[in-house]
Every structure is written in structure tokens, then in C-alpha cells.
Length: 228
Image 1 (cartoon, rainbow, N blue to C red):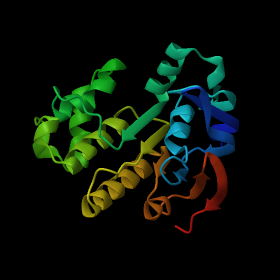
Image 2 (image 1 turned 90 degrees about the horizontal axis):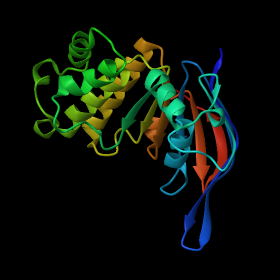
Image 3 (image 1 turned 135 degrees about the horizontal axis):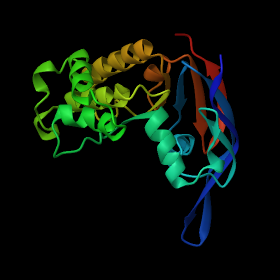
Image 4 (image 1 turned 180 degrees about the vertical axis):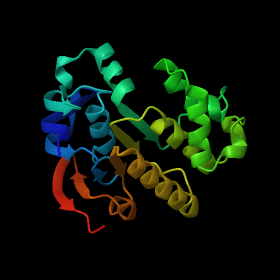
């Protein structure tokens, strides 16, 4: 199986007043196509920063990231955005739906940006798949947290991404709703054959993936194969 993400000796610091705060140190790992992978660690361990770097949302101070066969350091900001639009999907803790668009319009937007002719048809099919057939014309403010995250899942899979990054996908949901969203996430992922990378502090969720990378204080403390 080919590697879809290859990270080598990644370092990242931020300025904090007059000091440089090292957020990630000597991070190296790779992920294969169609693999499910979790990055876990306590708050402040650097996991969301790592996700942002891997997805090309931010740039490392040093090291190398190859995403979908492309070295991100060879790309400028616009080129990284094009790669993300074509190959990468996102699910965030706070849903990040556009408040002025209906559920259906939120799902159709990424497809329309790609010039797809059947954006609305695909959006309807996906919303039906996530159990929101009767909520398509509702705005985010009219939906519960669980429903909003299901819209976000449908949107993330709408463009058939090669790799999907999920940042604390159940962080804003109660336990029962979170479980339903996770089940849906893995079902959609399996069906689409997408590589799934989940950033979470929830070990139960992490153990549903094939491999787990543990971070602490910006360093890798272990790489494990999950029991699932």
C-alpha cells in the first residue's frame, strides 16, 4: 500500500512574547492509503498544530511533509489550497458550517467550487445517507449539535477526498450523540476508501483506528497498533 502522508523530523515553534515556544519536536511517522490513524495526547501536546501542518494549513520551521505524493514545502499558499480542495477533507470540533446556508447548500458548496454539475444531487444523497433527509432545508441554527456534525461529515465526504482530517470530531457532543457520529464517520470512511486521521484526547475513539500516535509535550512518546 502506498504512503499518503509522510512526515520527517518536523519542528514547529511559536513566538510567545520575547520567547520561542517549541510546540513540536522531531516528529516522524507515515500513514498508508485507506488506513485509519489517531493522534492522541493531552491538551497542549501539539496534536492540533500537527494536524494543521500535515494538512498544509500551516508551515513547519523544519522537516518535511509529503501529502498525497507532493512535498508541501515545494508549494506556495495558493498551491497548497488547491491540493487541499482536491484531495483533503476536514471535520472540526465546532462544525464550521456556513450559517447563512441550508444543510444542503453547505454540503454542495465544496462540489460547486470544484465545478461539479451534480452538486445538489450528490448533496441530497449524502444527507440522506447521514439520516438528514428531512432536514436538508434547515439552517445550522435550526439543527442540533449532532445534526450539524452529520452535515459536516456529509460535506467532508462530498468531494471524495483521498484523506480526511478530523479534529476532535466528538468534542462538542454528548456521549450518545458522539457515538452515533463516530459510527457514521467510520461507515462513510470505509465506503469511500478514504484515509482517516483523527486528532482526539478520547482514547476510546482512538482505539477504533488501526494505529495510534501518542504525543506529550510536543514529542512522540509512542506509536501503537490498535487492538481494534
